Image (cartoon, rainbow over all chains, first blue to last red; front, top):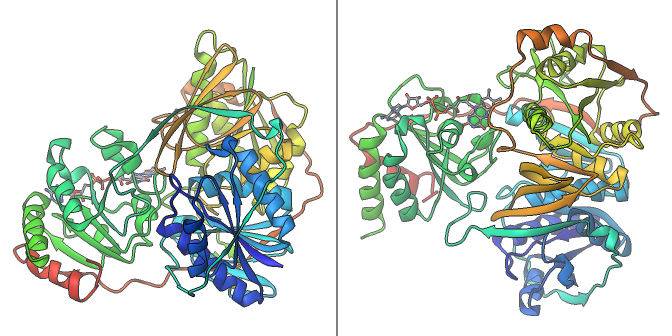
Length: 323
Length: 249
Ligand SMILES: Cc1cc2nc3c(=O)[nH]c(=O)nc-3n(C[C@H](O)[C@H](O)[C@H](O)COP(=O)(O)OP(=O)(O)OC[C@H]3O[C@@H](n4cnc5c(N)ncnc54)[C@H](O)[C@@H]3O)c2cc1C
């Protein structure tokens, strides 16, 4: 028996997300009285792999196969399926990100496992296996019961945090059986975002809406983000107008994020926008309309002109940092 | 070439969500039903491909798992331009069951491309598309923001965590689509609405359902504490509060 956790790497390195997933898997393993086994796919050093032990993995199955350098849904699902069977997994944990969403459903069919998608906390009970999840775009929570002996959970990033347990994981090479049938899609071109904090990884996000009036006014948003080590985001009309790249669009039809701090400048707070940001731990709104719905979702607010508030905020942050 | 769009019937995105029967079911009184926003974009893109000279796309079909009350939404898809529709006569329950019903219905029907939205805006699972592809044992590409076709070969753009990739795929396959696949959903024309009335809508009976996940109870999120307002000329105070009180910077 085990709880299996898929730890994704980025150019051979794990990120905070990977450690969060292991911490979460380990907490569930505790509830089930079993061990936590991580699966890594790609060229990751042993030092990096054993470090997963710090968060509770007792073993890491390391898969190195050049054909898996790019995400191929079928092949990845097949690897995890073979690992789950070998380790007799009761629960498989992965991230609720693009990779998780690509693999989890295929794996679920292979294992005939019920899926809890977009989970933010531990199961309420493990017998029956009941757990909370968001539904209706964050307008409600549901308690679901997963009735199968194997369950798949996809965890919302930044919802559980890191829990150190101070162990060292044993690394085992794992060679799954893959055939050409598993590799029917091929990647021809890759463009990676470099030198920028990814929106989904960021702990602080500075976001602008149509109230920013035009792309020429984004310099202070970017500067504030730089000062705070934050990522930048925007509302849908802003990306539809081409003021900002599509990757920054947050909301129901864009990215769903849960940073510690979300700052909204000139965003009205439409229900579809809030669907993507309402899980943020703290929301700050700056809007010149005191009746803007964003203030109902916000923790702190300023009624005022974003163009005037932004430079002052940058100055105040610099001052706070002691510059 | 034939394209299939898997379509989900969901409450309008502005719906105020309420529950009934001791918080065990959605109260559908007064709810407006719409085509799931991503499925609508998928349909729009499929129709654009069909109109492109030389794309080889001859037919666009929509399929949904739902009872007769889902038919207005299906007619809307036909009015937008789908050629025909299939309704599997079953109350949609969990993702596994929906995917299995669809896979059973379309197996051996020869669809070259199956399009699904990245999630349905009711249960937010992001599961149905990938599950269908596994049931059918065909390749799948997820988080797809662009689909083009050139002499039978598809070029796909997808977003990955931290970048974008261009892929080349041969039919048959399934694409789970997201933002970017089409900019604005198509709106039915008057002529489309007239034609939709006579377009074929096939109703088929489900296979025995198998539900792996049950929704047993719902709750509304706890109401939020009131927003703390800070004066416009006191930005410094706000930054201090974020630092010392909220401890987020
Ligand atoms: C199916 C569907 C899905 C959708 N999905 C999304 C989604 O994922 N994400 C999303 O964001 N939207 C989404 N929308 C759109 C959403 O309904 C809103 O239209 C959108 O969020 C509004 O963006 P905004 O707040 O930037 O612009 P507006 O609504 O135009 O608001 C601008 C705000 O800026 C304020 N303002 C103006 N000037 C200033 C100034 N100088 N200083 C300070 N404040 C100022 C105004 O008071 C106003 O509140 C969706 C809509 C639909 C129908």
